[in-house]
Length: 186
Image (cartoon, rainbow, N blue to C red; front, top):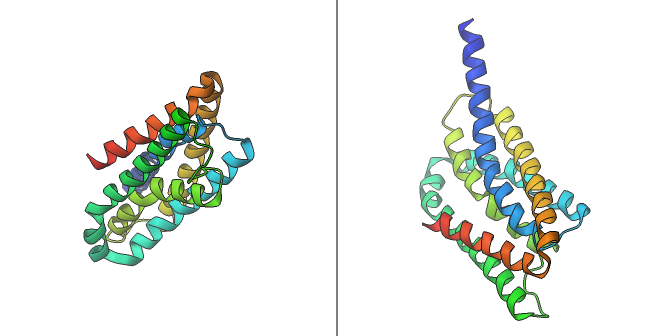
């Protein structure tokens, strides 16, 4: 009976960690979705976020404690900086009608930047997971599934809200990304 409780506790911990790591993908997905996004793009972004939420903890586990200490403090600054740049660009192009976009969130590079920015904290978690003797495969799969699903839910929610905001949707989405970038840094 004690083994059952320990296993349930481990599963609950894994789910809570996966949800916590997926929350930034959900929140930031709202910001990207407010800019206007098609359903097929939601699926592409969700799949890439899920892949990054699988890959980053695995890389963290492999990299070990040294890399975690080296990048641990910098990870939030890198992620926050990327989000601030993406959000600032969205606000700029929305307010000033820039015809030229340097980052298209529907392009592979834009999706890659988004997926990396919401998954970089999974790397640090992966380093920590390498020190435990739990079910690492289940944990990493849960991170990927929750990260992908939560990013898609955020994108769809943002898409619905963005359609109602009209031309200000992009600026509002950029403000959300900029705010989360600042939160990550500070």
